[in-house]
Length: 441
Image (cartoon, rainbow, N blue to C red; front, side, top):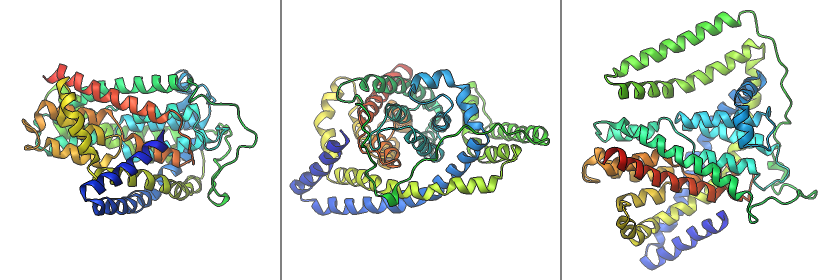
């Protein structure tokens, strides 16, 4: 399916550019997207991915990943029956889901890439997405988000009187999208067009040997004893972060129950990354592991992962950039906007809805333009603006996520990941509009 979508975006973009006399604009957009994929995304990702892969190696060697996986074993084994209950993939996926729930995008993506590598170590069909991979992508593209931090920040910058009002509506909408995403993935994997066939003994990886990366074989880590000084140090450390959280909440001066909940959520989002970056190495040191050497060993994979995703990034961003520059989004909005408005779907939201699965940056730009005081009647406190904010908080850049995650493990046959992700996005949009009408209208 992704093959035809990519081809359609490129061909339609060229044809539209030719008919409108803007082929030069389409060409410039293609070259600009290539530069953005490599310079603005892949290269900065090298350091970011190396950081989180190093930290995750410490967590795995210290046994934290396995502890986390065991704690949620009943839920995870139902979602991913093909993954061994104590496999590191379970913990990696849980860490990614937790980061997504807290709105930690910079941490969620590297953790998700690590999860894909762990899942690839169990995949008997190189180049073909497994059922576990497709389910994980469906959850990732529709993941429940407790606090859409960036969206709230955009609304606050636009002058909204209550920018946190969308937290509840976005949560309900993303809850619906997650349920549909998981259900769609489980249903579609059983259909003849997506069902996995028998494993071929002759299947080989298609990428050159020089770029092939085999995930490290899984072995249950030894249950290392804790150092004698571990308990008092851990108590002081956790006490410090509790104090940091209290101070952060007090600075927000919450004067109502709703403001207090928002302040607590903001404090968690602010402290989550520093906590993880320091707790995992500290816990590994308590287990007497050589933290520096283990971190460096895990971080080595960051460069190879970032290089591997470049072709996939270029492919999807070039197609999206060309289609947008040719006016494809505007054309679709003009064609179906009036019909949707007749059934209660605000036509002002169509550009955002169409752009959201394709480009996070493009969707942010449309959203900011929409909520500005002159963008829509009522400004950032209008019903339309709150619907848009709830949509941003309950949907994901599906094609970008699929390209990056599958690209990191050289998956070319994505099976039902795209339709499951798009169904989740559609559910998030519809649920956001319905919930906002019920709450704010």
